Length: 108
Image 1 (tube, rainbow, N blue to C red):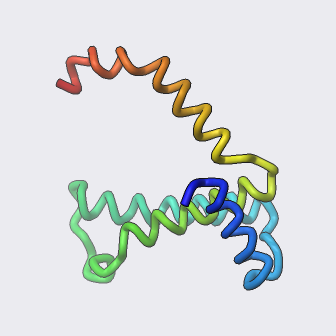
Image 2 (cartoon, rainbow, N blue to C red):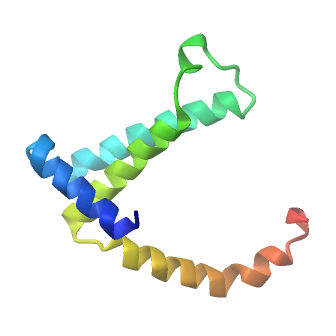
């Protein structure tokens, strides 16, 4: 599924199951909360903090999907075509960063 199809799937779900989109500020707060859940898992699972017993069953993929869902909601309600924006950004990064990363001694 590409990003355009993902945006359409989220829009369909919202209209069928969610009644309507939360307002943009509510979704921004929701996005922050979801990113915090991802950060918590990564900090404890891959960082130096010990993982609490209650966090061991958390699914990182599911939490990342929550982040993506809210990003897709925000894109839909603000009229952003994420597929076009992502394609443009990837092209920009390819042109701008190709040599930079390949020549970075910290990455060797």
